[in-house]
Length: 472
Image (cartoon, rainbow, N blue to C red):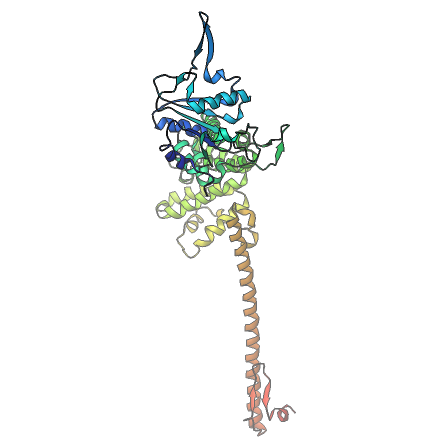
């Protein structure tokens, strides 16, 4: 059973529905119903007019008003009407009209596609959009059966793929927003963490805001304005978070802001240039270091990406970077400067994920930097498995890796102790066996005792018929 369709499916379905059949799009607020209608009209190269029925004070706002000319009542067509050019008319929030009389007037246009005796041009289409009645999250006027039977009804669900391909246009939308939704598609449309609250009419609303395609569009425009004003400066976390909380709610804004600031910092702080000194002035270098210091003071976890980029870059290009002694000294000095700015837990992370894996290669980048800057080793004096906290990593997977490492280390220590104990016991047993065997031989020769029925056990004791006699 088909309950909901996507915008991508609707895009195709509309091509087969006769223009004289009015289409009703049902779906939650903000998922992009009216934006879809406008976009679809643009693709059909058809004149478009939008009318929000909830904002109308009387039906004349939609159908035009009468006037008296020389004693004769004349109907004046509304501004959107064209007698010759086919039009796609979007009647948004049709079930939120302020009065039933306005809804009845709207339904007359839906039914006849005409205004009084003025017919819409051939090929024109009326498409309505409405919020669902089910769930009572909206103050709506429910359609009766006769009214709802006038439409082709399409109940829509949020369509992230369609939004990314057709709505979120790079240049118009902030690229960080596009990339964030690409990575986390479920965040395009979410209720915030708040329970519904009843209104005076019995309907419900959500105390906190929703994240919807509409709210992401507004937030995107706000980010673009902020970036134009600030230039290349990386904004403070609270600056971005305040602007996001009002659009997508405080919880989701917190997640997005972390992603956004990591991108901005990575774009502003050029790790290769900071390590080699190539292509930047001293003034630029000082600005980048100051920004890095400010960013990790505000949110220490933002050091993760920088630490990862530093060691990935050194590992990938070490054969070229360390070809000259002078270059090694510069890189070692800059490496020490950057790493010493990081919290110890992220230095530990660097040791675990990168440095400790280099020890099998005597020509690794760490061994080449250390002689030029011996202080580097002091950074990792505490970077042993016992000092590495599970919280040093951003992700649950990384924390699990650290915990597994500590478990494996404890197991290895336990197994090593068991082996040492077993070896000690074995050495003692071997020594006892040797001593007892030597004594037996002495007894056999000196005292002429038959020892053919005796054997020496692994713990040094004797077994056999003659053991009692010998023991005496």
